[in-house]
Amino acid sequence: MQSDPASPRTFESCIDSAIHALEAAKLCPKVFFKGCSGIVLIRAEEGGVLVSAQGGKGVLVSHKDGIWSNPVAVDFGGLGGGAVLGYAEKDIVIFLNPFAKKCFIESQGGHAKLNVDFGLTMYVLL
Image: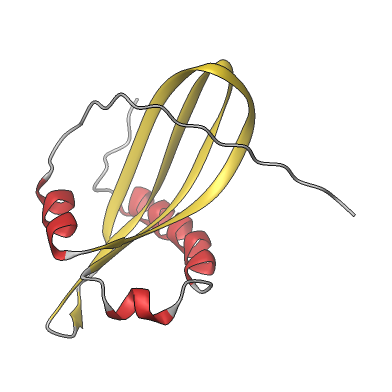
């Protein structure tokens, strides 16, 4: 049974995820905030062995004439494959320019994208 994406419980979980990403946004230079017309705050998870899956949720807020919009729920997911081993949680902060904001807001439904990505994350506990 799927939950209704417009339900308050789902929206609350998007807000909770965005709060994690907001901590990462605090580390961004203030000039990024001044020059953007929108911000997407997402908490994402990815992992797998040979086949990977990723997904996350958060919020988008847009900015026009000095006024910020109410938050809009954002949800994404994807599959990948290749030399994959592991699991990671990450906070994503996306600063949108006017063109990117228009594309992001006007895109309804899903998109398919094929790309090559390489990432290496190492954690050392002291």
